[in-house]
Image 1 (tube, rainbow, N blue to C red):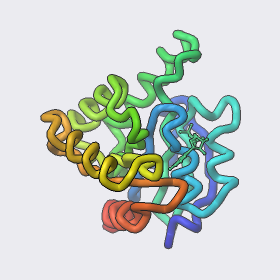
Image 2: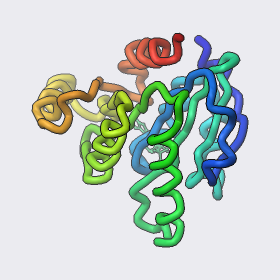
Image 3: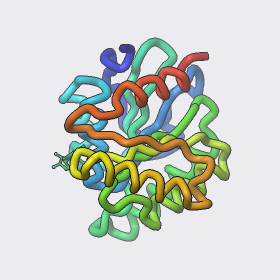
Image 4: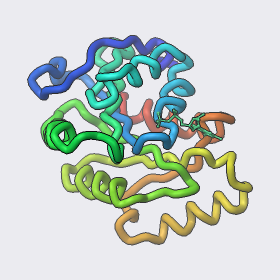
Length: 194
Ligand code: GDP
């Protein structure tokens, strides 16, 4: 799997610092505590990688990881942090928006949610914005291991009926047990393949 070759490249706090906009990249986003770092760990089988993205000062940055040549994995700033000062929120909102709006090499957005309290107002905003930019969104209903299989399936069915989520791909996932990892790998491979 090419993701195992993920190597940290740089952290970006301004759009001008982004690497050249060529090749293909996949971005991952999610509210704090939904398991975005655990998902990065599981995907790349590299513990150190997610640690990078949690280093103080980098949690509000866009963290870029190189995969195979011309392919990147992009860790977007966590959003919905209650304690983030307003000034900081004002600065990374526009960075995220600019990235989603203008990044030519961005193939799709993986949005991690906690299946026990999914689709918050922040998630809804991000999905609406990403779709408005023509970005495909793939939702991971993470921590599915915390529910019975039946309850998890039922919750996914409920979410799939929400009109705003009609165009959004969605799957059960567990960054702990590995549930759904093959489906996720396939999605990412399809996005990254020219
Ligand atoms: P982040 O803030 O989104 O990067 O979240 P973390 O990856 O740090 O995970 C937050 C907490 O949820 C940690 O205690 C993880 O161990 C736990 N966690 C993450 N994913 C899962 C999962 O799929 N199942 C379970 N049971 N716990 C998880």
